[in-house]
Image 1 (cartoon, rainbow, N blue to C red):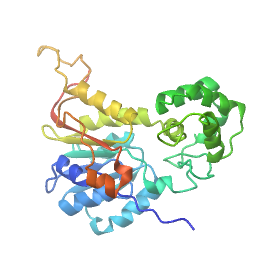
Image 2 (cartoon, rainbow, N blue to C red):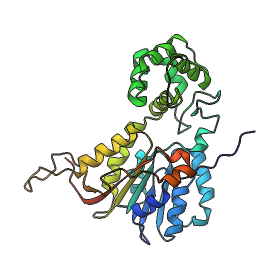
Image 3 (tube, rainbow, N blue to C red):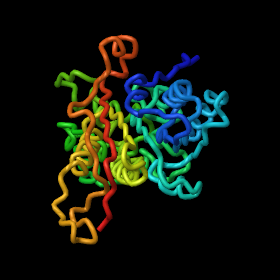
Image 4 (spheres, rainbow, N blue to C red):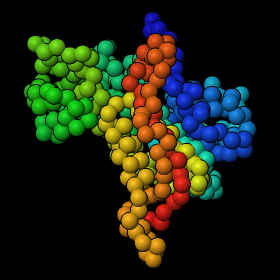
Amino acid sequence: MNKKITHKSVMTEEVLSSLNLETGKTYIDATVGAGGHSKAMLERCPDIKLIAIDQDESAISIASNNLKKFSQSVSFYKTNFANIEQILRSNEIKEVNGILFDLGTSQMQLNDHARGFSFKEKDPLDMRMNQSQEITAEKILNTFSEYELFKIISQYGEERYSKKIARAIVNRRPLNNTKDLTNIILSIYSKNKSKIHPATKTFQAIRIAVNKETEVLTEALNKSLKLLKKPGGRLVVISFHSIEDRIVKTIFNKESAACICTKELPICVCNHVATIKIINKKIIKPSIKEIHNNPSSRSARLRIAEIINKRKAS
């Protein structure tokens, strides 16, 4: 029998203080998961309006149950957060006061053996956040070329043995389950020590590719900057690995940079989405106490941006 896993939301107090919650205002939890952050937000400020988004149907079901006490204040949407603009438009909402992205994979997903996110068991090669999409880890691993696999594992996993792993995958096809993939990676690492489990980076890379995580994150963050209240709207992002954090940092730095366009120009040719200020120049990390109580929080990194004004798109 599988042990029941409860997912703990990370850096909850930091999130609450970062969002500057105000009574009667509208906020978005773009990755609601089990609803931990959303629940904390509603308990702290019960009269806010909350839009909860997740592409995982099971997460929406769990969150709606966990937040049933606040059913009058929260609306759920099962969709990718890249569709954040369409959600607001369909509700005739022009702007919101705060948007939260918690980009971590939940313990519920990691421990659901049907999903194939974990390298610890013999599970299906799935790795889909949205169970209705067609592309799976099995399709990528068994049909993509050696070069395509090398690019995925190298770019999204930053795996030093990406070329060897890609070649081994192609040579040992078909792969039928997560154990097949794990064993291939362990054979590559047989004589090489690793501080983390050798399969960690490759599994991360395949999951990112399956869900197109870098593309949709970039799209969603740029859309979010357009949807935040000016001035004062807050964008709060928690990332868990360097690839995600690099995307967030790059967008924040670009939008906080000085605009070189003159006042006479009708549009901004710098391609800025909005004028923002970065609230925390250094990333915010979990406290030692939180890491002790919730070891999975140790890699969390929080960044905050605040809208100063919006710029006209070119």
